[in-house]
Length: 231
Length: 342
Image (cartoon, rainbow over all chains, first blue to last red; front, side, top):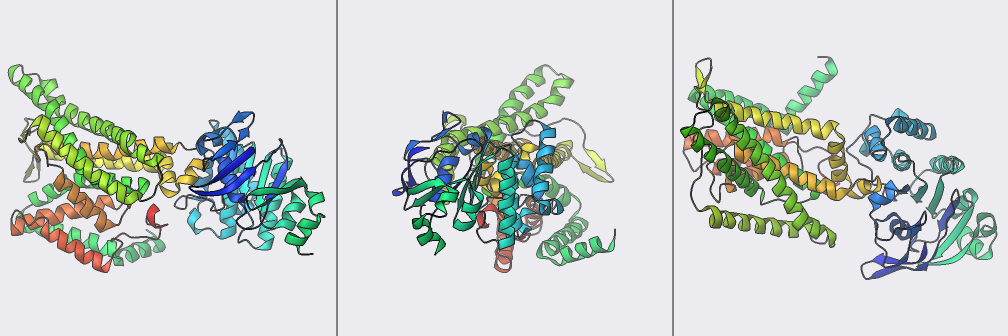
């Protein structure tokens, strides 16, 4: 992604943001409220058309490409609002996540995989998504995003509004996923935890990348310490 | 039936929906004893078709947030198509009788009506609503309201201009004796029309619940961005929804040609009826449209029988006003009501 400018209508949120993610990486994008983290993800996913700049995915320029088509190409976006189908059961939600797969066996395989990742979902397969608790919803949204065999997963604030141990569970699941070879771009406000789990990070402030580097280095950086870690 | 399910049934009977349905059935039985079973036959025939119309309006509202005030015009398109398929064939049959052709003529007419209606729906979506979706969604509800009113006016006037201001009807579909249920004689047309309505409703229910297309439509209705995120081409789903909804309206128009001859404003009464139904059962409630259709049909048939022609819209309107005062979200309101309110 290069020199990306994006925003809503007249409001410009991102100013020449450039991010580069290699295959198999676990990259984090952190920053304060209103820095443009979610906007970045929304723009990459295709829900929000960029104002200018270039987004390349797998060697292809995907500016202005519909979200549905990106999903077909292996890009999966898990939004902050989750966007679950609340009137459908957990299983139906997962099936919808896998609806691009032609192979029925592959779907079963993925289903087994996400149930392994989140055993809680297996207990609730027949329940309506609207009746799940906050943590379970988040798990379902992530699980649904994984059903389509994505190459790159964009996760927006998975820890938002979750109890600490549930957050831990979600982060661990992402780690497992990354070990399996899936590239992850994680957006978070919980800086300490994110930097511990990710391999590389970008710090976004007021719509610009102010710092970037391996997470282990960033965690000892003075700027980061001062602003985010409070030490 | 075990204890928990019977408890559920009793609980449902106590709810507003249960009370209304029970009252409707009781009224239907009482009236058919008092005035003869023809009342019931009329209710079933028109009720099924109003249900189809209301399913369409409800679907468009639930999936796309479009309040379609032009839905009656797709009914008109259906009746017009059926007339122009059936009438020439019937003329031809007068000169050269042919048993098979006379059997198949109404089927061709009704099927043609549904197909033309569905195509008209797709054209409407592609030419008007797809363009509107590309711009931003600000003021979507009001824009759609105005656009559909415009479509209604245009289609009514095009009909007047091209096909004239006359009644174009077919007296009966099949020249065969009526069927007897006990000592009640019902014309074959009515039986078939009722059958078509039921078959369409069952097929539609199956489509929505068990096929991947139905699941996609439900997914788009529940969360459009979520649907895009899992890779559903929402524009295609929207066009399909339009095709289904308008196809159903045209199917109703074609099926009821023997009761409602085609003329420019033939769709207005069915449009009002389907809006009555939607308000009665709650916005976006597709399943509720079916009992709602029969209820409204019964209201109208009963008021027409007891109070005379012309009152059939007044009494249902009054009853709906009452229901809305006490149950503003409709009688079948549940927690998961519609996309709109979530």
